[in-house]
Length: 151
Image (cartoon, rainbow, N blue to C red; front, side):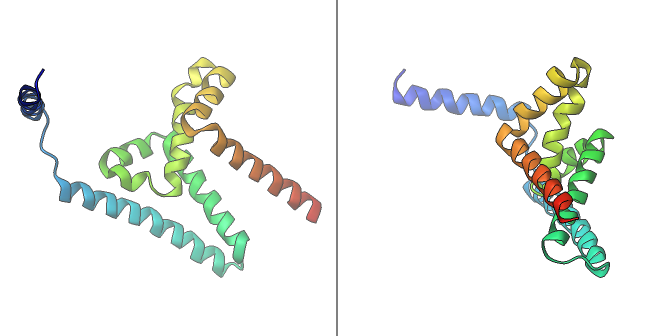
């Protein structure tokens, strides 16, 4: 295929595909992502302010807010709500820490019928990445051990 015929083929193919695909509404898509991502961050800031008012500071405050947001991300994924948010918000639901929680919990929910080890655990590690999941698990275990020692 010559260079000119390849260009015509690519142009014809793109015209064919664009005939089936609806046009992207960039402003609408970006607005939704911005609003949903901002709303998730506002919820996190609300929890931070409430915990700060309760007396938490520093690393304890940051860690507690992160755990709360991860918990709600997993809870909403398990209830099927986070997927609907993601369909409407796009990247706005992926960027915050709740998006990470969704990426871990979603395969676990989807493959739970295959059992705990070969379904939930194996698929959870494949999608989210073993390094990230093991890092979070190790961090939680070390934090728990440190907390038990400090008592």
